[in-house]
Image (cartoon, rainbow, N blue to C red; front, side, top):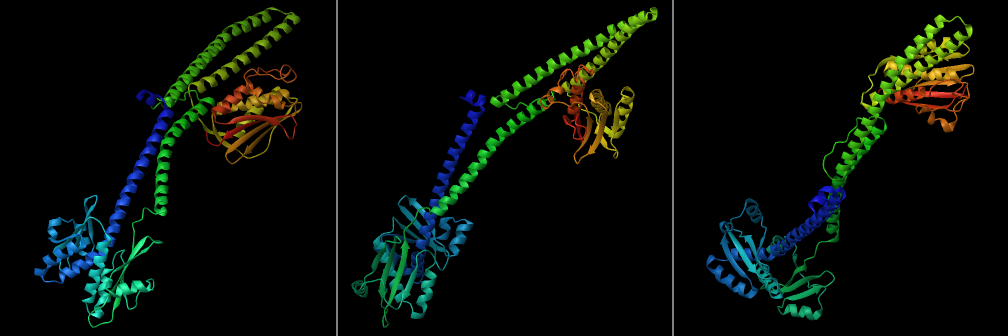
Length: 534
């Protein structure tokens, strides 16, 4: 299994995604459990605020000698355990002590069904501790009865302030001078008899307690405790928020996982693009032995093999071309010797034809060597060495060198400012010369060279008024030794390497060469596209 994970990139991705989903589910469940635990403790704290305040206030107002007996009596009546313990016995932290000092209630659990509450006594230094196993109807009625007795013992003017100080949590406590409207007459009669009434509000899942309190010598008032809402599970809004946060975190994790794979694939794509553009020294960094790593190793092996084969091919072409120069030179020497020895006009005419063929063979060897040199520099990853070059000067030199050979043609450079580009002047002049020479071979009367200065590039257009290049052949003419029909090649000469050399030179400089129809001369228009920076 470990080997399978190491070898399979996609299996690793699936396993990582599955692990992420399981982890996210676990985090969500733990988070919901913790949130629910905090919420239920907060709910119990809020419900215990008013009863604990009541008990602490009543105990604090008693003489110390009566407190123990009173707490024992009420503990029995309310089915709970009450005691006063020193604050130091709790070993409270700073925040716990601060919370108690602010009148808060602490909640603890002795067992799943045993709860314990603590509240600081008004005098300070001691804590009221209450333990109970659950809230029952008996406790609710008893605490309401106890609240009524306590309020009856207070002066009329102090009752509302005492109610306000007791009502701090989620358990509302209020008094009114008229009986509650929601009670029926028979229920009011039971209240008048001193009974504590409990009413269930099913629409809110809550309980309300009522009690009629009649202080000695005063008119009765009615005490209302509640509504006391039952504990609710996590609300939908909170669940939706948690789900959104979880999905967001999950999306980030998945993005990081996929991003790593995408980055490696992008590097492979970039390397393949560079290799396709002729940079045969391109290699991929292999980071692991998984599927993508093996693809990278295969890519590197393929690139090395292609580079080696092409290097061997170019070395052979270069060696053969160099070796051809020696016999060609011998043939030329022999022809010249024969020409010097013979006075026959027919023989001399034939020898001049042979000499012309030798010149063509020399030119062909030169073309092959130039093409091989460009291929060799591409294969070995040699970058162009650009320098500032005046493009108009190059075009003028090319035209001046070709004009004597084509006196019947009007070869003209369009007027315009000087344009400077960064390029290898020797190769750029060779490419321009090949295009102008090609145009001169196929033009009828005119050849026009134009320089166009564009925002991010410079364009050299070479146009002629010849027959042009058919659209279906405009890609093939840049292949080595490619020829069109006899009307454009055989009759006018050429070896099929000139345009290939132009394409190699432009690719080496990061530019392009294209051909279309000349809008003015109606022949062919070749365009050199040279970027501003190479």
